[in-house]
Length: 130
Image (cartoon, rainbow, N blue to C red; front, side, top):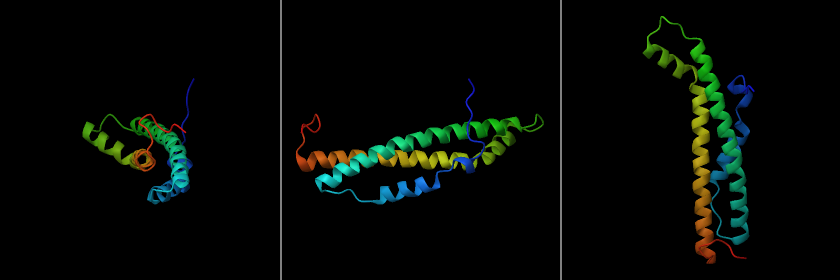
């Protein structure tokens, strides 16, 4: 079974989602119980979506690197090949790095929300016991 990735970054680039995610990360954490639980739910959902996008970006980068390797000639030195490949896949690598940063930021924000919930509302160590 052969897996196909997007042909180029323009077919994949989730610009609207990245803008929504950036706005979400800029939103302060609420100390109101209902709003805090809603934020935790939203951040958890976005964490899953971000991880999916990150996996897609990794795949896109791998396909782009493979295509760049196929275009190289034997006459080039290894250093020139490496520099040329990095230049060819710079946009794919940038997207992957942006998504990795967003994924890490979401994770940290989720941890902060859960810690705040625990501190403010006296939840036991095992989590919410409702």
